[in-house]
Length: 213
Image (tube, rainbow, N blue to C red; front, side, top):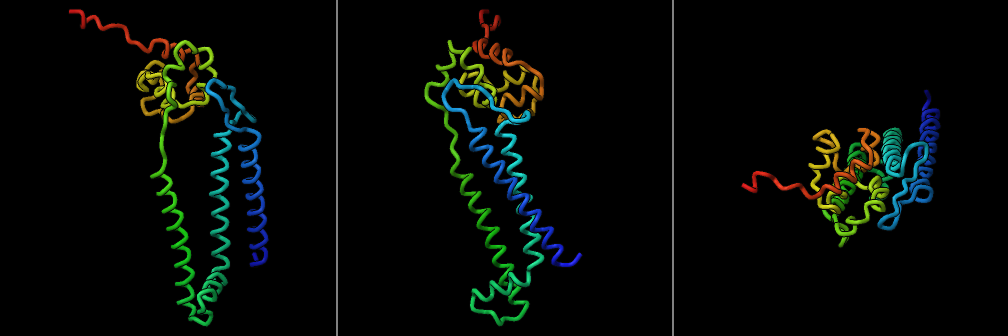
């Protein structure tokens, strides 16, 4: 195909991806917002997907958009290098030097993204709301609906029941992702939320007969 045809196809695909990104972003923010309140546990679904599923779709759409931008830069590489050289006051530089300028800009951009993600990762904090362990006791009927929105790790922190006990009692694989939401794990492995409540109610192990000897 001619270059103009390639540009048209590329721009059309980028336009569609940008529209999909905007749609999923608005969907997550306005249509499927996060639930607030300690015991508000209804799960919002659209076509069987919740906001976390659409968040993953949003992420993959962003990767696709980034790939199209990379192809766009490759098709217009000479223009990019010439423009960067002009910004540096080197408009008349030789082609090799212009290419170095363009490559340097790409490397600096990639390094900036990587550094910002590393910084963000170093600033992440995991907190447990004060009193959550006590809030569960005596309120299982209220707590049960909310559990579908929580991960095994979060439920363990709030109830004091070890993650390993949930894995054993719910017959989950040993390598299950404990950060995955319980509602999704329930759909994958077929257990009921009542089973989870039973594990929480049995949080106190019965005394070991060997201890009485």
